[in-house]
Image (cartoon, rainbow, N blue to C red; front, top):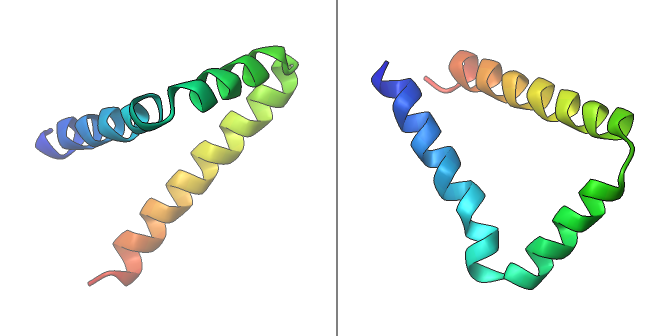
Length: 64
């Protein structure tokens, strides 16, 4: 449980970096994402989830 909470905390840190250091570019990126069709956003989300899970799997197997 502690690991999950720490992972969520790190996610919050990483999510907050862009609006902190480049708020204008971050707003532009959000506007661009809002103009994309839902199907494209679903594909992007699926690719990110798959890539993240693959990275976790590879790290747990090879990082000993």
